[in-house]
Image 1: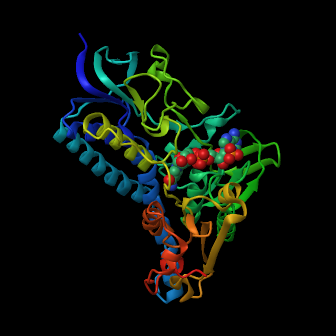
Image 2 (image 1 turned 90 degrees about the vertical axis):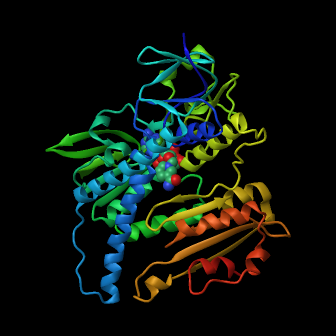
Amino acid sequence: MAESFDLIVLGAGSGGLATAIRAARHGARVAMLDSGMLGGTCVNVGCVPKKALWFAAQLAHAQELAGEYGFSSTPGPFNWEHFRQLRTDYIDGIKGRYQKRLDEVGVHWRREAGRFVSNDTIATSSGDELSAKQIVIATGARPHRIDVPGFELGLISDDMFALHEQPRRIGIVGGGYIAMEFAGLLRALGSEVTVHARGRLLGGFDMEMVGELEQRMTEQGIRFSRDVQVRGLHQVDGQLMLDDATTGGCGPYDAVLWAIGRVPNTESLDLDAVGVKLGKYGRILVDAWQNTNVPGVSAVGDVCENRELTPVAVAAGRRLADRLFGGKPDARLEHKHIASVVFAEPPLAMVGMTEEQARALHGTDVRIYRTRFSPMQWAVAKHPGQTVMKLVCVGPEELVVGVHVLGLGAEEMMQGFAVAMKLGMRKRDLDDTVAIHPSSAEELVLMT
Ligand code: NDP
């Protein structure tokens, strides 16, 4: 007979963990299954190791700036392997803490995959059956692979964190978050980088801000090859050449990174057994409450159609657990005003609408405020580079519907403005706010 639980969570990444822990805290008996690593993409091969590398990249920039400030030490080379070990230790610490929390709240965590037998029964890969009235799919997504000759000669983002040596020359295919982030941080750490993008960079971000970022990255020596039509990858004398229908061949490279989007992990779940409906690109369709079309089956995180961001998965999972087991029937994630940062060089942060989105929706009712300035930390040393900020406002009340920052500290600035936007911030509220001086963030309340 199947072992019975209140909730079965498929997937032990950010969304799955958040759902399982919150439900267990509410007193639910929870089983969580995943054949992969505790923490999923974000902790193991995503946000966390990437941000660690980004910090290393900031230190590389700081070394350069320190010289300009008058420090005598000469910037030294980066020890990639030493840092990889530090990163691994840090991540092991996070996973240890997750394990401890799971033990504390009594989640029954099994390191194996599960597949649907019915809408309340899951078969595990070791042959057991588990049953629960509620099943949450949180199996995430994985890097997209395309069927071109030599694809396997390149790397996917997961592989980047396992490299024991920093690639000296790298070609990056794609123009999204992952491409732009790796391009920036690898360049800062000394690699020669070429980004091969087929369309616009960073779809979803404000076009003007993306143009500014591209310019900054170009000034740092990052090359952009645009309108590419990648046909494959081949090796010549141990070096990689990218076959591109637009430019012919590109390279040689020591490594090529495919950063061309992610696809949901649904294939092994036997969703057909219960008839869970999939949407665009095979992602699970959910309503505003994370319900799939099958009673008792919900989904959170990158496996479903929503923004592929860890905090979105976590927030959706916690609210779902609150609704199912915490006596909060109205709990659900509001997807408006979710801030996001591309950890590029410099970082680009945004919350709300882009100028294009606002103009499409509100036409001539849109008013844009923008400012650009040399951040003091750079200006003191006559270091080139500017910060750009932009407010997108709508209507006679000048409701702020979009905030965009490209520059030093953008990643830390945006969170508070996301709160203010949720509260209905108008331009005059910014005008009424006394600045913190001297800072970069103060420019957001000083725009005229
Ligand atoms: P994105 O969706 O951000 O970008 C994919 C890029 O690959 C696009 O530029 C797309 O071009 C391009 N592309 C797709 N197919 C091909 C192809 N066949 N040949 C050439 N280019 C191609 O995906 P990422 O993989 O960068 O990241 C996945 C998601 O993970 C992000 O969307 C984001 O939600 C999340 N993420 C968030 C981060 C953060 O919060 N800082 C960091 C990293 C990832 P086109 O636009 O023309 O389709």
